[in-house]
Length: 425
Ligand code: LLP
Image (cartoon, rainbow, N blue to C red; front, side, top):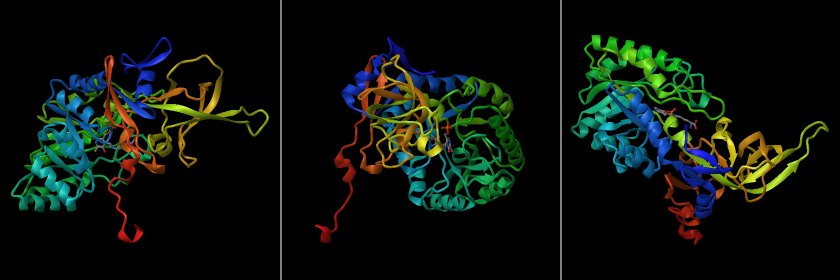
């Protein structure tokens, strides 16, 4: 559920017409709803009420500092995967004891940064990393709180690029080798074992992969405890998938109903790292139609196709190009004009630059605004300056007010940090 709805055929973000924001801030831009973010976060919080838990929002989905502050103010923790994300989480006021740090390639500098900050735990992904964290913690005269990311070999049945829990993936340690790794970790003097981490993939729309993988992890936790290894935290990894099109993913309350019985009596602190299900449908990408171009079908019985050329492209929202992901495209002002099969394409010089393909859309005109829905997660965070395009602005709507929470980049930003060697001057 989200707060982008039509009133009198006009798309609103909460109580603000999207058109008004676009006219004031320009396009392309991201628009987020404060209410939706909060509702999604609270859905998790309420679902796991009664079970000791921490919800660690996955910053990779959306790391705008105002969004992070909004979540921090409401008690949210953070799942970070880089020094940059850790910096942002702390800057937003997320307490270090609610921050977990995953990722296969943490650098020495990042490990030092996290140790100094005093995070809840490192989710370690290899024995090499384990040795490095131990060594660095020793040097700093600290004990590093750690969990091992295990790979439970469960198919999340999602896109291969975002599926991480299968044997062939680069992530984690095969669950059957976990005991040996934990024994090694137990011998390292500067590590303090706190828990087990797993994450099997993203955009998971059924409960079963969560249950199956958690069962394996709980079994491992019991084995580890029988070897005297203290396991207090179970980190379940990312959250639920979201409806982009016709998917019907479960609600967090259904997830909790399925997994809380498995944890009962185990005396575990549960960590969840949802990103997409908190941010995805809390944001839209707003873009303006620049030009229209009609291609006649190559066969007489083939319908004509319309190219709707917009001012937003794959550099702004790469999910359709990268994963062939579906995002609904809606007119900001509804009309009853004839429906035409349309490709909604950007200005980037690549055939892969599309936001929607073969959609039946009501005819649009130059200057019309379109809303690309479900763009709040992995939208702006994956955007780039490709084709030297300044990155889009971000706006947060709360009730009848809207706030620019990141200004549109300027040409100055495109050369920030660049240097011209003497011989070229
Ligand atoms: N925790 C870990 C360790 C992760 O790797 C991820 C996502 C999450 C949590 C958050 O998962 P979520 O709740 O969002 O499903 N760029 C892709 C998604 C990549 C996800 C990577 N890891 C996309 O646009 O679909």
